[in-house]
Image (cartoon, rainbow, N blue to C red; front, side, top):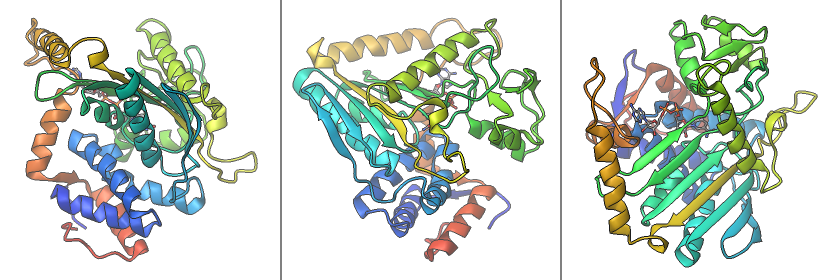
Length: 368
Ligand SMILES: NC(=O)c1ccc[n+]([C@@H]2O[C@H](COP(=O)([O-])OP(=O)(O)OC[C@H]3O[C@@H](n4cnc5c(N)ncnc54)[C@H](O)[C@@H]3O)[C@@H](O)[C@H]2O)c1
């Protein structure tokens, strides 16, 4: 293991992930899908959700929070809608199939919506709408998650970090890709600050007595015991619009549980009353809209591209160098990582070495 970050070529990391996933008992085809979602996250620069999560999935499979073999099924089907049961398998595999069903329906009827229950963590929400963009469609995806956000004026973690992802084709080299949690930050960012022993800004987390928390010393422990909660986008109270993030997180929870009669809010704890682990039962929602059913695709792309260009060329704040549109950083990061490799931090290297030993895998010349 190196004390420094190590850059690993993308193809080597993918080969390692596929082999590690197969060694966890995941079928080869499914391992390819999962490795593709994970490497997409690393390519986009979302290092918390890429190869860094490989060990987490292994732990979850080992304790029975999810199954390595994904027996998903369509439980209700109409021309434009479907309900999918994920069979408590791998979220990325379920998500991939569900989004493809939505795309197929949109190709035939203009729109496709698929609600999923009994799934598990599906990685970066933006991966799925990007499958729609590749087909000249607009895509959307939502997922619920383990409770961690407190409602506005509350202190108990009730809602997951419930991301919203929307991807839209443009005439540029990259689409509009908005993909973000409805919490002011993801839990991953708190963990990074805690590991570095750094404080967090007031407004990210609230304690159970209603005070903003900045010290990360015992914060993760407090959050695990429901003694501290993340804030919705907009932060504490109503002043900076915390109620709007709260509303969006609730919307995602509804889409991820109500159409499919799935688990929600406190029902998403991963242990039962006796503290025994049980299936995660996470829900997702996927939407595909075929642009050509409204307007010719090139015309649509020109309009959305013009919007992006107009936004980026608008007047800068005095101390800023550049205005971005959503999806732009991910595109630029992808080009950089393809050229230079994925940066793997010492903590992640350590976890991967342990995983390699546990699964009895060769080192794949990863450089650690
Ligand atoms: N599966 C789950 O349970 C789960 C839960 C929460 C988050 N996530 C994932 O975590 C990832 C990170 O979420 P996050 O909340 O930290 O995202 P974030 O705060 O990094 O925001 C990312 C989004 O904002 C855009 N963006 C960034 N800077 C911008 C700028 N200056 N101008 C315009 N747009 C800009 C990006 O293009 C991207 O669309 C996402 O991929 C999300 O899907 C997954």
